[in-house]
Amino acid sequence: MKLRTVYKLHRWIAIFFGIILLNQLISGAVMVLPLPDPTEPERHPPIDYQSITLSPAGALEALAQASPEEVQDRLVRAVTLRQLLGRLLYEVKLHGGGTHLIDAESGEMVEITPELAARIARSTLGTSATARQVERLEHYDYRWRHGALPVYRVTLEDSEVSVVYVSVDSGEVGGRSDRWGRIRGRVGGGLHEFQPVGWLLGSNRARKALLLLLSLVGVATALTGYYLALPRRWTK
Image (tube, rainbow, N blue to C red; front, top):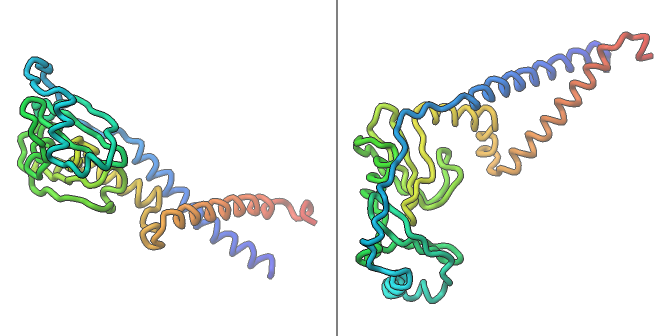
């Protein structure tokens, strides 16, 4: 191969990796920009322990009566007293997965319904906006790639079209986003982390392997570029 052809090929490869580097710099700068958070943090009222009429053992007994087969097959991992929309609940976690909520006053089993998930979302953001849509997610998608499953994705009718993810099992908020946060997430996942490559290849490992290969080629391009830039008398 002629030296001129080598120079031309190397130039185009260098331009390609220069574009990738510029993309990484711009998308990285967008990712580190602070997210505005105009909402007030959720505040819980003081716990009135005198209203508790059910002991942890009583909560486990109520759970055993409601789901005898599940409780017999799994050991209890933890029992926690927590608040949910001003209501005192026992959160019972089982080994191997599974979370149940029991009212600390009545012993009633509490289910996280779509309506309750919408109330939790509004309380988390401190807004009275109505819920535009409540979706139950059983699998990950491009908007919810990590975290617990299943979850409710609650989209609110506020100025930022806020989205809150509420666990179906525990009612805990696993994530939230607004319009700017979603834009930043698409820039980070799509441009900086090359997530679409993983979707096309059908494997996150393949995406990482391709990024590693491109990095090695980029390093090789830089080193050979320095070599080709040397005066000819040095390369003889």
